[in-house]
Length: 153
Image 1: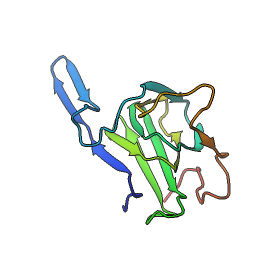
Image 2 (image 1 turned 180 degrees about the vertical axis):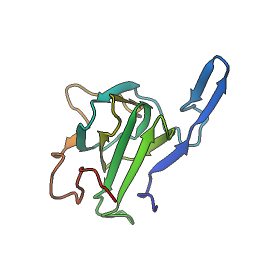
Image 3 (image 1 turned 60 degrees about the vertical axis):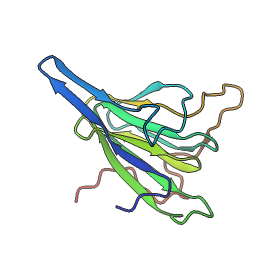
């Protein structure tokens, strides 16, 4: 799959032993590290879609810690070499990766597991309550050519 320009998908290192496991997510010496704003967890119940939005200044760094999520991103940037491209990722307990989403790229997700899914985000900026860097569209907005329904190939 051709990735949207500026998007990074990083394999995560998992260190299992007889006590359990440790999963390394993001380090300040990691080539994908672009700064730290805050860390937070968001959750979705089975079948719930949370979409669409983008940021003008921040990069998002998503890791699905629990369950499985379908994360979809769309490039509407006018001067991007990948304008109009959609990427779809299935991330979570069965596919441990960090997804870095650059500014101005729309993104959203849908919980596709049978139980609640939880996403850790480590954005590069803190959330500004008075002036949020967040620009939203409805999940079914026709300007983004995507249908959130399950595809039974």
